[in-house]
Structures are given as C-alpha cells and as structure tokens.
Image (cartoon, rainbow, N blue to C red):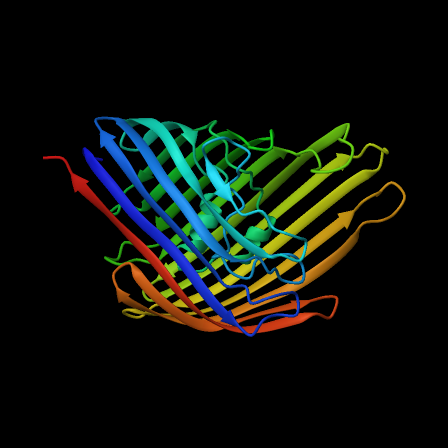
Amino acid sequence: MGDGIDYRLDGISVLPGPAPAEGPIPWGIRLTPGLQLNVGGFFTEFRLEGGAGQGTTTPIGANYFDSVPSSSLSDKVPVSAWVYAPKSDEDLFRANFGIRSLNVGYRFTPDFFIRFGRYRYDVTEHQRLLMANAYSGQSKFSYITIPLHWLGGEIRYDRRRGDETVRQLLFSASSMYGADNTVLGVGQGLVSFALNQDPHPPLLTLTAYGSVRSNPQPTSGAPYPTPGLTHGEGFALQLDYGIFSGIAGYAHRDGFSVDDLGREIVETRDGLDIILDLHPGDFRFRGALAFLNRGQGKDVGLTPATGQTEIDTEISASYSIVEGLQVSAGYRGAYSSDGRSSHMAFLGLLSTFHGTIPFH
C-alpha cells in the first residue's frame, strides 16, 4: 500500500411500509465517512458514524434492516459520542453521532499488520461476507457486540492474490475493552480459492470465527455476583460464478450468568442465512431466507428455558445508478412461532464511495 490518504463514504438508508404490529415504521439512515493516512508502514484511521431511525424489531427481537443506528456507539466514554436518550420504554426513536474508529497501526509487510485503538473489532469477516452483496444477514441477531471504548488491538494477516488458486487467506486475532467495562476477544479466519484455471473461474469462500465476552452488570437492581460469559461461533460459505452468488451463513451465541438471588440465567441465539443473488450488469436480484431461534431462562435450575423461532424473508431488486451508489426495492417479511407476522415493502439506498489520494 503506497503513501497517501484513503477516503470512504459508506451509508445506508431504508424506508419501509406499512408499519408492523410491533411498533412504528422501522425507517433508518446511517452514514460512516472515514479517512486513513498511510505513510511508510504506518497508518492511522479516523472514522465517524451517525444515524437516526426507529428501533422497531421483529417479533423475536432482530432488526428489520441494517440502517438502524448502531448500538456500538456509547456516551459512557468521554469525548466519544452523543446518543439520544429515549423518553420512555415506548419511545423507539434512535439517534447517535460519534467516533467509530480512531486507531494507529503498522504494516510489517503488505499482508501483515497490527493496530491499536478504537475500532469495530466485533465486526467479523462472517458479517462482511454477508454484507458484500448489499444484504445484511439476519444471523447478525446472534453476533456478540460490545459498546466502543478507546482500548483495543488486532493482529491480522490478509494475503490477496488475484491470479493464484488461493485468492485470499486471512487470519485475525483481536481484543477490545467495552464502554460497559466488559472485554471481548475474537479469532477468525477466511480462505477464498478458484475452483479451476479458467480466466474467470468460480470462486469458493469459507470463513469461520469464535468470540467470547464477559457479561455486563445489569443497568438496574443489585449487581450479579457472577456476571458470567457469552461465547459465540459462526461460519459462512459463498460460491461466486459469473452473475450468480450463493451464500449460507450460520451464527450462534450462548450466555450464562447468576443473579444476586442465585438464579441461573441463560440465553441462546441461533441464526441461519441462505441467500441467492443474480447480478447481471448494473442490476441485482436477491432472495434471502433466514431462520432465527432464541432460548431464554431466568432460573433454569428450577424452570426450563423457553424458546421462540422466526423465519425472515427478503425478495428485492437493485440498480447501480453510478459506481458506489445503489438503489433497491423489495419485500421483507417476518413470521414468528407465536403467530405474529409482519409484511413490508421497502425502498433502500446504499452508498460505498472509496478512493485514494496518493502522495507524489
């Protein structure tokens, strides 16, 4: 990577309707502009994030769209973010603005680097793979996230070769301290390779991750003597061949804690995404099916945990107006095991403007 400034302006906005039974229309807009300065082997990244929207969730508790303001921004850390404080439990409006990334790093080789500072280390290659085709998989319902602090670090090896059988080979280990005084660790890997020697061969990509986080104390009531841990695992695979992409991704999380009365509290989440995607020219046609499961128990030593399942669907069509700007229209549905369901049409706008200003 040469000396210069990398810039990016990523954004997503969604306007759906009609409103689901669970609350108001889950509209949202989120922007994440950023700059990265590269000098020699050193680099420093600065990135902002801001958004607003309605935090209406599906019957099981998943976000309908990825445009809802991120919960990673926290105002518990000084000089980092502003977060709208809801006026009541019924107030589902969400808004925030703050620093998403501020970190420094060093590249030992073009493929190997370390970084320290504020960064979304909890965003895995599993999530990026599902988002690569402009779809945010519902298996993110099972991801382990953490509110941003200033402390964190990552070691990453990311080898990319566009003309070899193994197109990409990635390994990463990271850890971060959260604004709620918890700690998260993530390990992950990815491999992408060509299936034959043709000039434009089919590509198969595989990725897997594992993460563990110390649980936060409750925001009200007595502190837990054993806050416990939450661990998560996931894998995904993608096949690209010509105008076709097929993706399957699975994610799981399992949390355990003991409250001040000695009750054992558990929560498990599972998410499976299956996505089929056709992208001829500037068009993209996508169908997605997600299976979600949630189990909860507040005293599993005496009372069995209860479960809930949900099936989410999406059918959409997109058009790339110019490079980096895509408009979409489609249908999103959610069907819960307790009999609740929602059906919405939506319009979306996705921007991914990236570039480099080299130093001469």
